[in-house]
Image (cartoon, rainbow over all chains, first blue to last red; front, side):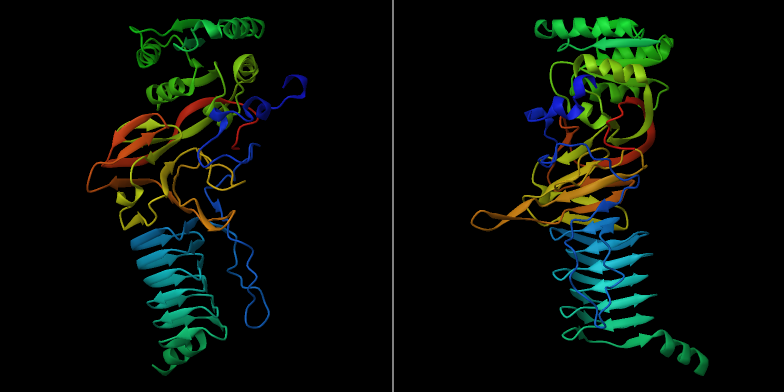
Length: 172
Length: 253
């Protein structure tokens, strides 16, 4: 660019230069090479029952079901999923799942790892770690390899762990 | 071989000085080519179709505004042509995304000839470069992705299917126009939490390859912030559909 001017200097403060969404950030930023959306989720100050930060406190998710959205049907994903809205049906992901405090999930849930802070009506099956926060309300069966439950969490259903499942298999 | 297509706006008298500077700079950079001036009898689509048929130009450079560029994208999609853009007459939204400054400085971008194969979106048979937005009542739209459906719960939400658009939220970056996916974005905007305080609600985002937008009553869809279509609409991604000359300050890799 001539005379030290950047492309931003040509587009700053012009009505046509404002893109969808009210472009407050007038500097070019390169988006990541994948389609993952950098979540605007605030830093998670919650710590697990035993003082460790949960593995599911991811800040980047491929799919975000925000508070203004309702999803109905069989939702299958291969990436991280954040749910803050309403989900009805089936919710399955190969990676981590985060259900926010105000989320309402009426679905069968399956994930590699899950962090639940909201309401779930349905069974939850997690291959790895499942964490229920103090605001979590689960009405269904739970299955996980590692389970962490904060005081105040509500579970109405059967809980099975990997050890218990192995014992059942051996007894059969 | 370059073919420069001047749209009606570029030919206006107020842009003649800028156009003269552009032509001189193209001459200095040795990337001058044939010139085609659009008029009431000559459309951009016709010029591009002729170029494809005759094989006389491998690079079409649209000299004009965003609307003309969007038309060129539609006409040249899935062809062997390379599309360049030289914004004339003011700031350009597409120019910002592609890293192409307006006026004579765009000549440097053309000369550097950095090209990228970009995805396009397709809605009811027409291609789009940036996005398709539900212009009417977003709550009335039902978005069908096959196994599941999505509905917006907020009447103020913006619903758009983006190939190449800025994500909502400060500093959120842009969607990737070369990942063989579209982004379904539902942005609820802000809500007031008190005097002088507003809270930004979390936007929703779904990476998709195809979807259907239906509604009980026909809704208007804004394509590339210009053309209006009506629901029902079938929207899908067309990966690597167009080769485009881009600048080094583009908003993607």
